[in-house]
Image (cartoon, rainbow over the protein chains, first blue to last red):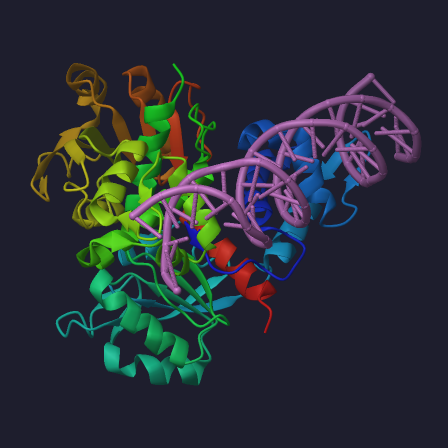
Length: 213
Length: 213
DNA sequence: CGTTGTGAACTCATTCACAGCT
DNA sequence: AGCTGTGAATGAGTTCACAACG
């Protein structure tokens, strides 16, 4: 994953990333009502001190001797990450990856509202995918602008990615999630998260190669 | 993305990640024959000093006053990341994400050799996907062991991910790339890279929400 | 008791600045 | 002149260790 410029808040992107991970552990342990730093720690694989530091940065959420209230903690993390509200998004490039994303667990329920699908392939235009009709590429700029869409998800081939990004940025998008294996150029006011799957493979090869036996 | 334990080599995972990114910039600029730290730097979005530090860690590759020879640099990075050789891999869970991965740019050419596909769905078993026949779940352990497969890619639903991981680890796999939205538990000798797509969305929301206007 | 919150120490990573080559 | 390699300085992030509290 690549991130764009660092955020203006006091939270580092690495810390925000860990918060997302803590969030994943809470549902599974929520029935307990309360959860401790050490439980979160060995779930995620960091130190308990790290967990406490991260959470302390969100305000005074814990109770000494007891732990953190699961529901309160979850809400605080959600608020900090900015996922306590709906985000509108468009998805560009309706291939297998797009279909996989649309089916992804709680994509909608997590607060991300896909408002349109676009593709340049005329044979795909008009098709219905996971309840959304595929719109032609030419309508992209106008729709994004009219609906004031905030986020764009790019799942087109590498060659097309930069031009799609340019159109979306021109239409006033605020953030892009790029899956094309390309380092995109975007204006500094647009946030960018890139997931290059081949990079993930390389990381795995590196880890395996350097793992101590 | 989540990484497992840090590597034994002198290279941090963050540095390894940047090396992957440098690698992405080289083909595009390879015709120049030589490439400088400042070019790589503003391509990837880090400082030129950072690039030089990263590359200097791989040995003496640069020529003062000139830059780095593109081909030499590319090979050195490949060697460091461990992608200068073939890796055998199996893919478990033949859904849309799996299909997308199989089609991904240079999946094979980058040195990752998918030797088998598995799925527990009997209607998928026997199908041919991107040139590979889908095998039944039950054969997984035996095949992985017999072929001494090194890497496993998990693209099953969250509920099934841990049990798939357990089987693969039991069969002697060395590294796992997990796409299920689950924090997996694996023995410390197995390397783990997780890509939770909902985490990527949360990161984007966080960045957009905290972006300075 | 058990668990948080946090100053202080420490480690790791990045940037600065410039000497050393070509 | 241009660009790398690298000590030294700086900064960020993490762990330690323990006081504070229910």
